[in-house]
Image (tube, rainbow, N blue to C red; front, side, top):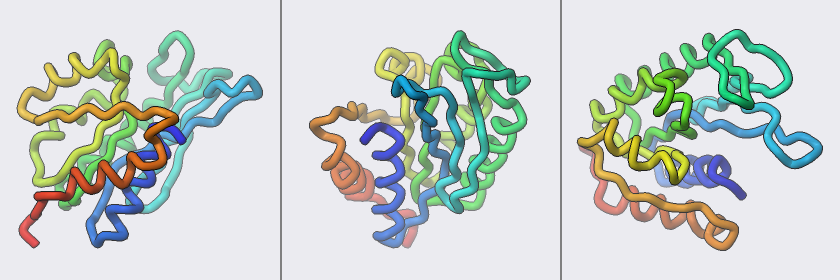
Length: 172
């Protein structure tokens, strides 16, 4: 179980408690060597999925050293995230904010300014080495960092949901 699986399970648990989770997951397609060769985006609210990135072709959008991204899919995701924020969700999940956003200002970077504008809980996936950069970009959002490991991945979704929703009352 990895970060995306933990996020998916958090969304399922939140939904089971009657909350309204929204956002985007980024499941990987693994190659024969076990390394990611592509990423899809999967909308938490309805399961709609699109190909976001791949290593073996040009999708015409931004690039990193390993991946080519589809700019149209990023635009679609940003639109869906903004709709979730404006329509009101209880939990917004964004898997993941990475170097493309924080170092290049591309990808999902435009959504960062919207993350402090709603009455919702927020679960962001970010690499440990980028947490400081994300905190600088979102200074008004209190952070709690959790590391997913093989040892904690089974219990982590329950712990995250318990902590997130312990004192949350969106006006219910």
